[in-house]
Image (cartoon, rainbow, N blue to C red; front, top):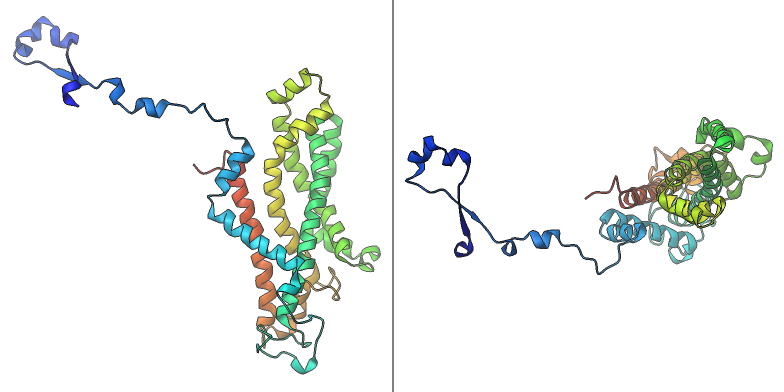
Length: 337
């Protein structure tokens, strides 16, 4: 490359001053500048304009496919969903068939996790208990998204007296802890006498929507004055249609992240209420009921309590990991470069 370099003499004022001409006359300072076509600057500064820019969701999906955290959590959640929908594929023993002759027996052929104090198969109860626990988490999350999303979107977009009323109403419910408020409400006669999956879902929705409402309100406030919203209004779109068509779709990223993490929280809340004996009735198989019924065997046979607790922990951890992966992919500020 050196034969293509062009020499350039040093013509600085210090070098050409009369006082130093005698000293530098015997040597020549040369600078070599490489031609531009031989440098990598052109490749670095080039921009590919042949492809359309990726949307937020397309770029998030491209990043998610490369994250082991997202892949592992998705596979675990899919496994839990399949177990909840088709439990008979994983357990051939009837979980309601209990024999006191097998009370507190250990593992044996066909019963890999042993038996409960009532002689029920632990493995079958863990498999069949997935449905009720997951149903509470999923339907509670859907209800919280509907109520909290609507109230947060209206409060953040319209502001004014609507924001004041909805924000103060949210503060009232937000001041009540989820578990404590659910315990108090489940003690009311109307709920205590009609305990079911839907009763627990209703109670958790009542105390769980303020968090989603706050997240939605903040995201809508951030996007309501964006240029695309102003342009849609200038083209004749009403304020409500601009909210539905433009503001809400562009505010979904933080809502999805919080909802995925909250789903695991609601599963834990159901297990806590069932463990305390005020959640699902004992006729409904769930991990919380199995953990509660295993208390007398904690010292003599702790495995009976261990397995439903492990299933509960893995499921909740999967949704938390999924939420972390979605946050890194959907939030540009938190995304790892």
